[in-house]
Length: 368
Ligand SMILES: Cc1cc2nc3c(=O)[nH]c(=O)nc-3n(C[C@H](O)[C@H](O)[C@H](O)COP(=O)(O)O)c2cc1C
Image (cartoon, rainbow, N blue to C red):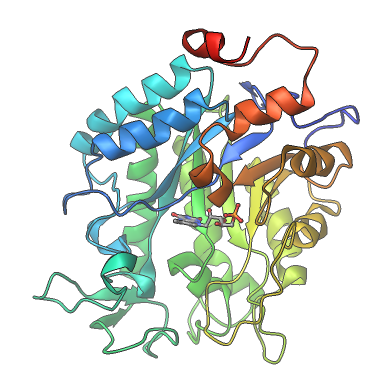
């Protein structure tokens, strides 16, 4: 745990490096598939992210934001591969900060899960020439979970790996120019970095496959590249899948996640955001409230970094208990923030009855 403060609760600030996050509630990254096909933010992003900052979240994190066009899940994902992307994101980060919230960006590369149609347009793979593109993969074997025809695939060469590391580094620099204060490396949910971590999808025989050391090399190199350009006074997060939920075969699991946590802490990663799954259709997930908390606790066991938990968290008291009981330093909330953009204000009202109203001054007449 980052916080030795045993009195911490959901409403307490969280200090990571020199950054003070006003409370322990974060908007979990959620794809909106609402760009044209250029990766530039639209009015949707401004209003969507802005409302959640108005709604009292301590951190507002963008959706998976592609570090290169090939790394988008769909042609409509957000991206940050040019300076124009950074310039157009800047007013959004400015507004988030004006609301007292911290703007964060999730830097992503979708690997083999790239080049698909939007969920509400069927989610099927798009072929090159038909709106899609050639996707990058650790191994020549096709990704297991794609229904329908697979997109053209390319096994990443060492040069490709280096290009992606460079793309992450450049994206982080642009994110900083855009005003983000936290960068999160997306290494979860079956996307490129997770595909390298898991022996289910990584069958390489070079320095990037085989042993734990080799399978984790890519994510460690990306994390180090982002850390290198991110200022010393600002934190870097990494999101991982704590397990593949494939206990019947050699796969990525909680024990390896804990080992990776230690390695990432050494690189200077400040918080591990622990999600799970997303790699393989055979995964067996026992969902429900707090279902990923035990995975966060497992990596937290002795790790020299802060730990975030996510998944099935819908109630302020539930989230508060996770922090109070030392089960997580940060609570990320996804779908509940789609249902209620003011979840943070609701939490303030329910948990902090004595405190000054957290509601924006413009809205106070509604709650006085
Ligand atoms: C619409 C939607 C889009 C999502 N997109 C992302 C994403 O871009 N990056 C990511 O790491 N997780 C993504 N997720 C997963 C969420 O961040 C979160 O981990 C998951 O929904 C579980 O939390 P919840 O139960 O609070 O919703 C997405 C989830 C939803 C519902």
